[in-house]
Image (cartoon, rainbow, N blue to C red):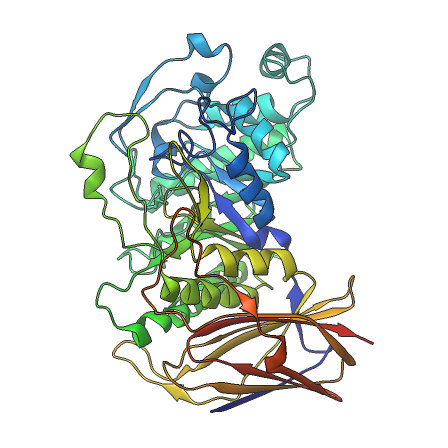
Length: 499
Ligand code: AHR
């Protein structure tokens, strides 16, 4: 099968905000305890953080990590996690039926993030709490000094402000599983007043207001319209969350789910622009896709089976090769919409529906989905270019005209490099993908593919068999044309130097 496209510097979608490659750590399951933090582990540093995990997070080059939840957030008191550890309370976490020890709190997490070289996307609890706790937290984190909360930060060991730029106003407030779940009207008003107060403390911060927790929520659209009606002038991003599964074991349909993600994003953009028109506003609302992934291999019941323990094994999905392909396509979809999607968080980062897994008494290892995420995060920087691919399509029960090849081209103008990511969704046919370009193609720097694996193949500790392999011999540059021979069911990355 053949596919073709033409790319040019004049067809720019947008400069990519590096926060599009963000991730997420929630106080749940073994994400924090036995994940990033485990004082008795042989690799742990003097602060109890696992260095094997830190190294893998650094390998991913994660630009921003959302914290501390998730559903956990809606019952969390941030003050429980500051001050001497021996004074910190143990609390019931109602969201995940677990016990939270508060051994890791704000300072510990901020120090870990600094070591990883990542920014923090901090979330404030709008479930059980509100304006006061939120504005105090901004003061604690970002105010220079000379006030109660900023001086308390200093007293707790951090002289300099944390200078956190990106903040979430609650989590999934549209869902009745959320502690303190609200109607759109209730949440809209609270988010509006909280946003005002937080920005009055520090007007340099950026705020993300909660959109729907998935496109299938019955309140989707009405929720966004009501919430934005209240908050449009005070916030900078509207959030989207979406997880996909292959419960019906229909591979073609599963791989088509990136089409649904694209439709969801386009619908949310339309909603934002409707509100922009209604408000006669000059401001364009940007999007934060701050939870996305594949999620279905584990089941949530495991949490309820062993309630009220610290760090239960929950949501520990083991990802297979087909999951990596969909994650690749979802990354391409985010990049295709990078004019509006400025922040996105792969949910989550460690142990809980995550690219990185840990063994309590052993190693940290890479799941299949680690690799497309890593390659995008390392090399997907610069200008996203429009790539309208001419290729055959297929239909499924749910989706029509699904292209067999998904692709995005990125011009890294700092490195003078063109990067092309593509996913071949055909089960048995190679796709010969020709890309014509006026960018001055010189030579291939690197080409890799994830291919030839059983769709159900998985990785494990000391068994990272599903990974990208060199595919240099499958790329041909001839004048202004590069040909990428993509194998059936493959994730491909091609980096080309430019004249
Ligand atoms: O990421 C796991 C959970 O999924 C989060 O806590 C919640 O926000 C979402 O429903």
